[in-house]
Amino acid sequence: MERYCVETYNFIEDVKFQKFLEKERKGKYLNRASFLRLLEKCKKKWIQILNSPTLRHAYTLDYDLE
Image (cartoon, rainbow, N blue to C red; front, side, top):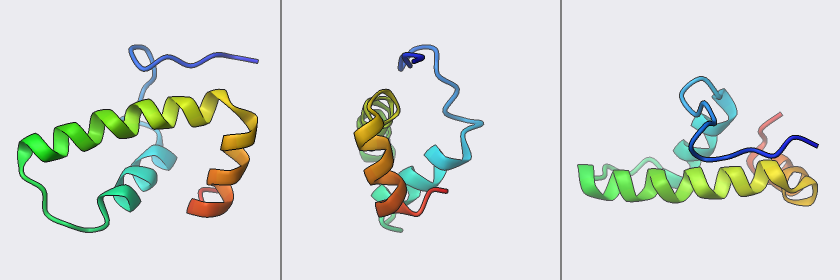
């Protein structure tokens, strides 16, 4: 199984990550500092999801990512 890393993963082209980030943002306006904190948190969480088959399956169902 491939292991993903925050430093090398291409978040910009990952449509599922973009959907995940939008759901975490909940449609609220965030100032730049708040958005960057949320982005970093979501990146770490997304890599954790990708590296765990159990989490990947659960988030696929929860976030309708397929």
